Length: 94
Image (tube, rainbow, N blue to C red; front, top):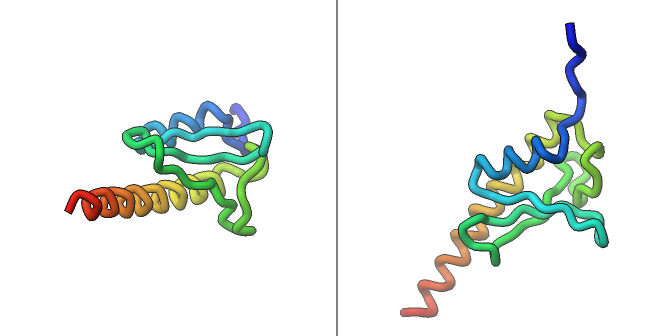
């Protein structure tokens, strides 16, 4: 019986974000992950460790379950930021 991996791969994390309408990016110079809305690249959020509340800096910093929590949190914050940006743009037009 094959052993189950404790960690997710970067490709798996990117696929999860993409399936939820977002794009996961890693920036080596600063060493942090961000998530962007695929429909509006101006809207983005940091990926935050659900336990320490600090920015995630490495793929293996979190196990599978923790990554799912972190990505879901980032997706929720991204949707909220996207909604706020749309509201601000509609207010400018009024």
